[in-house]
Length: 92
Image (cartoon, rainbow, N blue to C red; front, side):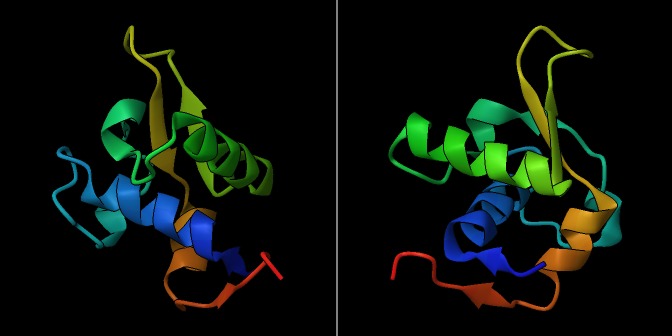
């Protein structure tokens, strides 16, 4: 399943968070970061909507089971989808 531009941007936000430091190796799979640290959008609402879409596709997990703050992590499927740099524009 191809990623939208915003989905790619959200995944990149996770990779660019302070706790990933731009790491793009497979070691990022399942590594949780605080959701607030991964938001590349000006709007929390936009980020929330995009994350919801990524969760439905199985590309990220979002929870607060392990710490008191909401966390997000890229799944193996999300990592695989991110790699081909294939996007589609859904704004048309």
